Each structure stands twice: as C-alpha cells, then as structure tokens.
Image (tube, helix red, strand yellow):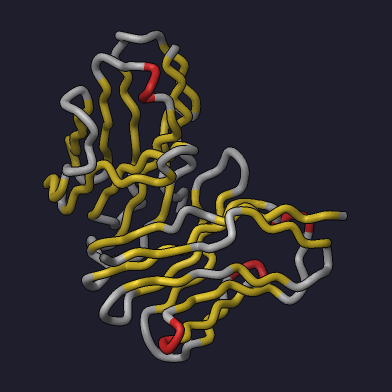
Length: 113
Length: 113
C-alpha cells in the first residue's frame, strides 16, 4: 500500500491567497484526521471525519479554515484567506475507525509570506 | 486533566549506546499507548503500540517499550542506537478506546558519532 498521500509537499504563497491541501487515505480506511504542527504548539488536531462525516472540528482555528471529504478516499483542507501565522506543517492521518491506529502522511509544509 | 508528558525535550547519546525515552500519562483508566518517530521533513511513523496483554511491546527498528501501570509510564528503549535513529520521538495516548488521541511534545534525539 502506498500509505497516506499528501499534496503538495511544499507550498509557498502570499498572504491573502487561498491554499488547498490534499490528502488521500489508505485504501480501506474510513477515518481521516487533519493535524497542524508548529514549533510553538506542537501537534494539534484540527478536524476529523468518520465515514466522510465531520465529527469534531473544534480544533479548527478560525472560519478561514475549512475541510471536506468529497468521497471516501480523499480530503481537502482549505485556508482562505491565508495569513503568515498559518505557516506550519499540515499532516493528515487515516485509520480504520476512529479508534484505529492512525497512519500519517508525509505532510505539507506551508509558508505564507 | 488527561495528559501525556515527555520530560526530556532533547537527548544526546553516542552511537552504540543504549537509549531510553520517557513518557508518562495522566488518565484514570489504561489508555492505548503509542510511540511515533518523525525524521526531519517526514511524517510520523508508528514504531509500536500497546493496547492490552504483554506489557513489553516490540516495535520496528529494534525499539521496544514497556507499559508500567504503577508508574503510568510507557518508556521507549533501544539497546544500541544507530546514527539513523536521530529524529524526533512522540509518545501518544489514546483515550476512550482511542477515540481521543493525545500527543506528547516530543523528544529530539541526537546521536553522536
């Protein structure tokens, strides 16, 4: 299996631009988690889905952030408009069920200038 | 409050020396326990996990961890460290049948030649 796939691996954009991060789950997994990692705050859970349904989005920092699962194997995390403080590494992870072991993708390093 | 603590922010060991990374948790019941490793620029890779049963768990890359209920600990060990083990190590606990997963702040391991 290819594991969790994320794209792009690196994104550099200017403040105010829209950013879309993409994630493909491991085949057969039905739970999807978006995390953000920064030096100051460590690893933070932003939102997670089970069977395409958002379960808990309490970690999403602001309304500028939104996430979707248009189908069972794919998710997007969108930031609009982006701000410099959004600069971080964004990881997605998938699992078989919410309580299953979480497998992480390689991450997207986002830099907002 | 439930939490997971990694007391050591940074550890340096010589190649070939033994290693122990500490992890303590605060939770009323026995959680699910995990260790992940993050190499520079990479995602989190699962090293090992404990759900139940034998309290000494073997993982990949020669790592093991021991769950000690009396000490609320799940320390990671390796008898002989290799230079390629230099990375950041995260302990994680899964609460509520792993529906709620909490990560420690991480321990950065440096390996001296």
